Image (cartoon, rainbow over the protein chains, first blue to last red):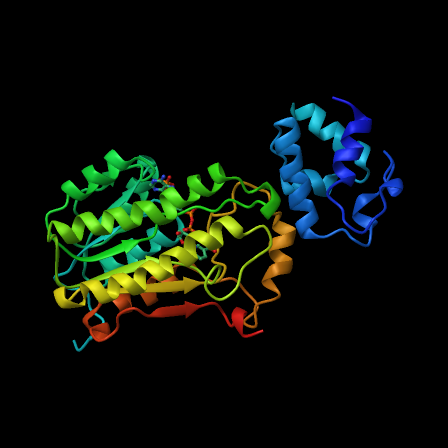
Length: 76
Length: 248
Ligand SMILES: NC(=O)c1ccc[n+]([C@@H]2O[C@H](COP(=O)([O-])OP(=O)(O)OC[C@H]3O[C@@H](n4cnc5c(N)ncnc54)[C@H](OP(=O)(O)O)[C@@H]3O)[C@@H](O)[C@H]2O)c1
């Protein structure tokens, strides 16, 4: 499982935010576009792509995309 | 004592009675004098409900409503009913682009097909008596509003609402009434899967004009009304129980 690919999958859930904005250090909850629907889309994407069932609290406890990547990896 | 809402001398089947709203309906209906047959999958939790019920307590029946044999067996285990409360149900929170047919099927099976078939079998075998009342636990979702990532759940509850209206017409000659109750968010285990955080739920609660979620008993009281003879002229209706949520 690749961090770069995870970032791309993550960025794909967004409509307004330019993909160039997304790096491993992006504090995603600070993005203007962030919403409860996006949180659920990330959970659904992770389930579909990585077979991992994240909880809302996993999203809550992650600050950066890399943090979330770490959580997904640890649950795989 | 004068009580037009009494359930004395009524036998009522409640599905989903092992938890949350169904449990409250079973307990409160028993306190109103009904003889309540409860069903669910989890035997331990069914026993807990059974222990909290009052009066004449028939045996509980374990059944998985996603299994059509279990639905058939459940209906065969029943001899005579004055009320049926279709409460078992689940939700699946998925944004629409991720909601695949298999996800819809999983929810529709329990929220729509099982209550439909159970009701049909009980009507056809004439186990539901003249004057009986069928109540579906629908929702505000899919009828008055929806929620993000709620396409699957809303579809199942919208379908139940349509079904109830058509059933109400077809069963009127038999003197059987069919109604829905439509609760807003009720404090139960329905979101125990954890995709929605406690923090998000607390935030959501503030959107209710009455500033809190409902309690399972508050749905039970509405169901008791629809089961009782006080509601004898009510069929095909929706009873909204939402703390004012859909006003805004
Ligand atoms: N909570 C709300 O905010 C809310 C709002 C509007 C409508 N509702 C509706 O109210 C109903 C009850 O929900 P709740 O909030 O009380 O949820 P809950 O606490 O999760 O209880 C769900 C009940 O449904 C039963 N059930 C689920 N799948 C089943 C299956 N395959 N076979 C047999 N039984 C099954 C469960 O039985 P086991 O535990 O034994 O498996 C349990 O008794 C549902 O139809 C729900 O859609 C809830």
